[in-house]
Amino acid sequence: DAGVTQSPTHLIKTRGQQVTLRCSPKSGHDTVSWYQQALGQGPQFIFQYYEEEERQRGNFPDRFSGHQFPNYSSELNVNALLLGDSALYLCASIRTGLAGGGSYNEQFFGPGTRLTVL
Amino acid sequence: GDSVTQMEGPVTLSEEAFLTINCTYTATGYPSLFWYVQYPGEGLQLLLKATKADDKGSNKGFEATYRKETTSFHLEKGSVQVSDSAVYFCALTPLYGGSQGNLIFGKGTKLSVKP
Image 1 (cartoon, each protein chain N blue to C red):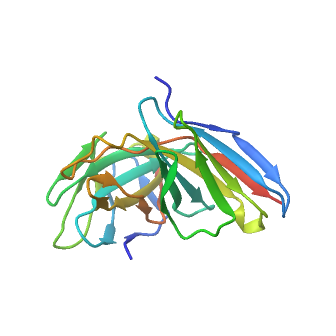
Image 2 (image 1 turned 45 degrees about the vertical axis):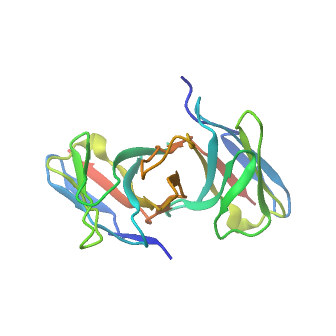
């Protein structure tokens, strides 16, 4: 059973460019969250997708957008890249829908995409 | 808003020493609490969790107890090994109607264990 996969592993872009990162969730998972982890910091929540719609969003500008496909995979797009966007971008998948009564379904993280903006 | 505060590192210990990494949180409602570990060059792995007050999460010799009265979830291990060297993140997630909200992380504590 494959876990969460992300591509590419590393990426180098220049300021002003646009980038697309991809995530395939763990088998049986239907919800995908994206996080940004700057060097030496904890991950920060960008947004979460469920049933192909953005369900929650963190404090990130509109330059960050996403998409979820019918097979539950997801993309993170960042436009007009800034130097400060350099970070490790993590994807996490969850199996929502069965949770209820306060139960918790674990979020599984992928290995991340290291984005460097020059 | 909800937040997590954990002790700053780095923490350097000798093998077989006792480990405590402090974590406190601020949240409305009844969050679930977690410790994640990140080994060099890798993504995050769930180490342990607790979903209600007084629950004790445990895994690989690590333990943490959900203390609602002190809003704490301190990580402990009785005897650390060199292989425990990693960055440890305390995190919480609020629950919305039974589904999982986003994870809110602390800044991380880097642990180095010397032989």
